[in-house]
Amino acid sequence: MDRKGFISLKVKLTIGVIFVCALVGLVAIASVNRIASDIVDKEYKDKAEQIAEAVVTTIDPADVSNLKDAVMEAYRGIDYVVPSSEWGSDAWNEYMSNYDGIEELPVFLKLRDHFRVYQDIYDVDCIYVMYYKTSVKHAIYIVDGAYEDACPPGVVDSFDDGIWPEEDALEAIPATITNEDVYGWLATACYPVVDENGALVAHLCVDISMNDVKAKERSYVISTILSISGLTVLILILALLFVGHSVINPVQKLSYTAENYCAENNDVVHHAFEELEIKSHDEIGHLLFSMKQMEKDMNTNINALIDAKVALKETEEKANSMQELATKDALTGIRNKMAYDHEQKKLEKDLEDGFDEFGLAMIDLNYLKKINDTYGHEKGNISIRRLCMAVCEVFEHSPVFRIGGDEFIVVLKFRDYKNVDTLVAQFNERLENTRNDDTLKPWEQLSAAIGYHKFDKAEDKTVDDVFRKADKAMYDMKVSMKAQRTD
Image (cartoon, rainbow, N blue to C red; front, top):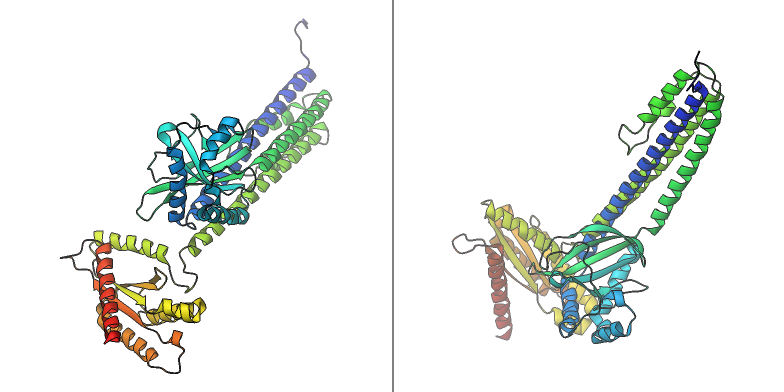
């Protein structure tokens, strides 16, 4: 028998087992690393976007606009720009001197301290505001809430790569993940700050450091490589001890399981090796046990990633709660000006759909300044709350909003819309009774002007038309009340 070119079964099995185990290890490492990266990257992007959107609702766009105007006034008066890539150079220091004094402005300190509060709440690295001039690819810092290495107002980032928004676009900038020499891994999201006229002011940005999670991710990959490498050595030793045809069938089962391990959904735990049954009490049995241990370790790490996703979900729910608080008036507990803006949009939609049976009632508290000056602001707050209670009790079927210090607005629909004259009379009678009640304190004896207007399709086109006429009716009543007091 010619044995030329003969390769023993032991050698074939050894080579085959080494190949299969290496393949499984590489696929497992690549799959787990990709799953970990995808899950972590997505959750950090979502978290950054949610925090940016939530914090935008807590700031006054007018403050941002005023500070931006101060920065941009200095920016426009400069003949040249020295970008942040030259930070610390003489030219950069000379350029930044054009913005001296901005960091001492009260509006700068107010916004910076406000951002730091939310940095602490959400445990993020930095919350800041930038203005993008896409035409010249300048990203200009307006205010930076970072505790360390904060970028002063006027610092310009200039780069060719990356996403540049349209200068007047109101869309949020998609979240990105970057790895820079200075800051390391960062998840960054930007959300537009829009003024009361619907125009873009700037972009509020959030940076979340991913250095710790990326370090853990690398550590996990290294430990997985070492574990699989050790396992491969063990399989090689066992393969050298295989004898006869009793080895072939178990090896085929293991090879088939390994080759198809990631054929199913790879973002959940697998039990392919756990469910595999091979009745063998030799090296093949040890090999199967080792594969099950590897699978268990992988499942443990995948479960840890799932737990991280749950934790990030809780953060999202907290962000939603903060957004809900942003529409509630802190003094009275009713809805505030932001909530009325949302209600106005609903009314405009109703008008587009043909529903025009609604009206607005404006209420303005009298003598608030006198009460504040004479008895203190706390007594003025009591007057505001008592007026709020009176409005809510009389117009109990209508939403009530506090849109200013002493101004309330009622959206009249359905029953209150039809009975508005009766309700206004009840409201005036109630206030008249408080004014004539000598047992009440001066700040409890309420006086307020009320005016309303129902939508008239012959004259009105928008909700703002109704608002202006209701406000004028209230003002006319206030003038009339003042005239009566003068007589």
